[in-house]
Image (cartoon, rainbow, N blue to C red; front, top):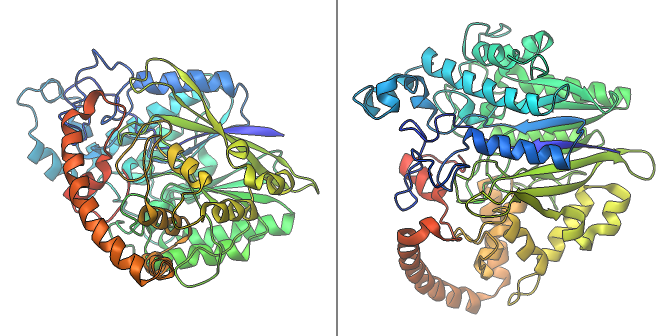
Length: 526
């Protein structure tokens, strides 16, 4: 048995502590330009170098010799459109420099080279920190929507060509070099054909018995621009994916799919994250090679979650042999505590290679100054599926058993769902959305949580809500609607009051719902 380190949504901000730092702006006046009281970062800000290095130092203590390191996207901080101005001293220190309007206008022109160069530089700097902490260890990454400029924007080359001088070329150039002799670059020359065509590539691990397909999920996002020439298969990634999985099947190998944006719904506003045609195509391929795929690892939502199919009906995730796993983020931007996974990989009885278990580690305190500790071990938290996990590892059947245990009576919340919700913010208190160590979740909240775990599309989610609500009975629906209005009113008042005093409390309001609504995006993360 071996194990690997899984990091996600680091959102490294080398300008934390300056006027060029990214600040969410929705946390009661929290700004990220002063590091005096918060040297390791704070809720409402992206990850400073000190936080990244602190996470890596602790990771080396608990995962001294990982077989490889997975980074599931969003290496670069938010506000990528302003990055190219950050080396201007006047702008960085708050002088006249570049005003916000001119920066945003320039960066949102079609492929702005200076901004993209800076984003690639930041991404390369993060990978070098990881590679230096784990020398001679393979660092395997997927691209996230904040790794390109503008956000979600990626120009693809002409059909069959390689984008050596464009956006993907800049990223490849930054990720295939390091300044340290002990640090191993994430990309190499052999990755050029597919990475320069669409931002994807593969790695063979575990004695060449497992192939990791690093997918570029920006191409399938509901927000992806510009419209690709070949809409049905942008970058020819699906075609490549099918060929690699077919080869794995023929050669008796297993595969792990690593991406950033998951093919499902988000847990903030429950919006659909991929365009529907791509969701259907993805699950069509994974279903065809269900006996090959042993893991689906994604990020984007900044929280530790899973998705699992139980019935092969329209709009729902099919009942696959593996769940979709979502990794927690290093960035504390949305009120979560920084966290990472250590995933065990090995053989189950019978000889098949599987993902076996997950240890999750997070910072101990909300000011991030008291170190890190284990938050929980998956198999110990969800003992209801322990007998299945002993035989099959982190299988689809194990997660279906967990999901079933979460569907308790109408009046009492399952202890397993409560645990799941409590760990979503990696130790932080409450985001007002039913997530966190101190959060509450009524019947309506529980239905939304469970439907989000199973739905692949907005249609599937709405159908699930409708079916679950009808099962409560008409009287409950009327009562719930009336109570919901009262709760919503007082909840709004409570949120407003909480935001005025949130900054030094344990309970943090999630900026993402406000953040994304303000920007007018139909997406979940950032």
